[in-house]
Image (cartoon, rainbow, N blue to C red; front, side):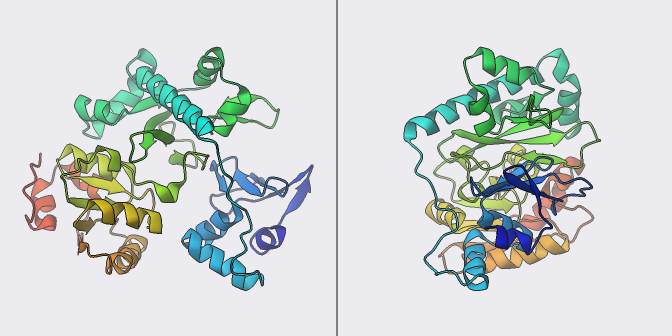
Length: 345
């Protein structure tokens, strides 16, 4: 495992672990930790971490399977060998995590509707979100460490909060909240279970605008399409977007959309799409990475039997969310060529 990381990072031994400058954000002090014992890594600033395969996939912009193949070839491993074997998690443990996440979602949602959530509520209103859409997506607010005290009083242990990626130990070994001063977006799987969160920074001081839950026993990013749980079974057309706000903004304008939470489309996500939909509109950001990702996604879906349409956004607006915020619904209709009777505005 260390051999892989040493090809990308300058590692230094610290106790039982190794630390390095994180390549995923502007880092001046080593904030990325590698545990050989647990076979995992984590950046405590980005709040990103996971297996060695996930590290290679993220840094090389590959899928997990592509990263496994690269590691196997580069480090002369048997093609069938895996560096970190997936563990079997008892359903009872998963259910407890789902319950913890759901309780946390309700806490965040309640906080948004109190005096401490005033700035967060104003932020959402300024983005053009109605009270109805805020409620439908269970949006919330996390202000500080109050959540930790609440959950500890509910009987959860420090270990459980850390495992759920709701809390972490700081350099003084004090328990602190992962999400501070952020609008909270619950991430749900297709069964409507809360698997994780994304927090949008409101302080304007964080290097990370959107802080996502690290992967847990119930949250594997490549297995989830954000907002799939809210799209009815009879709906056979969907739009793929990059970010949470893109999906929420389109949903507010009656356009069914799912977010990749990035630009990569996994095999599991392809399976979710092919089981549910006959037509997919690809509507990623209009920058170079977004256009390259659109081409790649198109090629991945071409043999699935799904009708594919790429939304060619050459406008001044970067993404679907910006178009919706601008209330330029004529442009939105033009991009879709009026192929579906969406009620915009």
